Length: 206
Image (cartoon, rainbow, N blue to C red; front, side):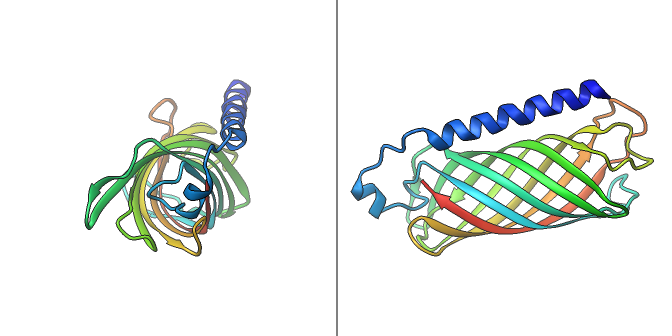
């Protein structure tokens, strides 16, 4: 168990260092780029999300109801230029997340982890940008449910959302994701936690 905790802490540190490196790297944009900044030409974004999560009992093998309050720090880095034309324009980005969940049902506990997600932003509108994403990562929890065979688990997730622009650099972010946690049959028992997460936050383009 101590090895699992040490591994998780190391991965968490590496992700934090990566995010700090990206944050302090030079943006290299001129005044014209600053004026036109939006999802069509931004280099990346920092996002802070918060919200609520709830498991779906009897969805798959999920048996326990677990409710959480979520806080997620996210960095997104665009990998491609805007592609397409007219009503169909899209950009591809990769997102690194450091999620924290405070469990309040069935009892107090925490969940912390690191995620790597692929995201597609549909950029035809300059005001509203819908997106879809998928990915996964690692999650550590001290929840200690009878159906969870270990504290260090994997997760995968998929979801959708909307970016709503307040100004050229500041964006409201509405996000829904379907979230799965299990130990991938590396320990017994292995009852998964299948849940929905409803999140809202702010994104800051760079």
